[in-house]
Image (cartoon, rainbow, N blue to C red; front, side):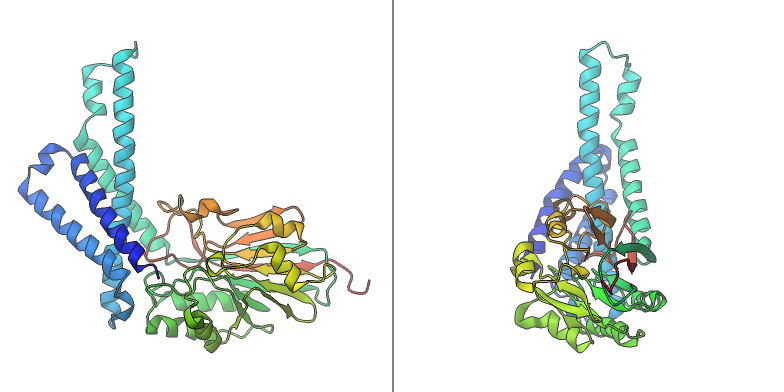
Length: 385
């Protein structure tokens, strides 16, 4: 689905590598040993990225898959961070020296040399990029138990509802085998009445073993009394209902722009992702026709159109997709949504967006966290009214 896009991205990283090369000190570039190491690193890194998004899912050996993903992630993160920092250095140093030379700004030649010292900055930037990578590489595997309290003033037979929300598992390069044990433990600890899965369980790197690993989680947890529900994310393949078929086989109910009931009268609307030609909030509520006197919950993949959903009478909307505030990817699609992660109010409606269990394609996450979210909902309306 996205393989061709990332092959183009790999080509873009070739040009990025050229930019980084000319950002390095000239003495380094003239050193044959340094150049040999640099060229080898570029070849191995770019090859790993291409492998992740082309044949990764078909590699039968987990150890080989992990190493490819590890190297590809390291190359992607360090190269991106270095490019950003070298670009900032180039702009800031030239601006600083221009101001100093054309104004009365107090500066001496010694200060100029310090500001423009490429070797000092190159070492600092390279070290920082690898430090950030290793922090994010280990941070992504630590699943947090995040809990929220929500009160809904609506009439229902239920007094409370314990919801477990997960999203963005990205089974494959994002989520490695040992993460599933932690996921199962946290879901069981939440003791949910219902488990909601807000899309992107799978992606372009998902192989047969990855599907089995996630299915194992759904089949091993203590089964929620009101079941497991899933909506498509932008990376879940809808071709011939592929992702839906896998989720149903694992025990989940798939919602495609439709409404179902949790218990007797809690209304849950499941949205399709816009990539799969979803309806507008107005069309969705018109077709589902929820009872405004009863609780209305919405499960969607992307955190978008929240204000419109609030005006339509939604009480609680839950989403994923953004992966939280994740450097250096925070300037991506998350900016197009209504929120990064956490809990936020839109009028009378509560919105919860999870930063997800993992991340797409690369094994890295920082400062965002990986999480399993529990939402304890209290209904304060009088069911007898």
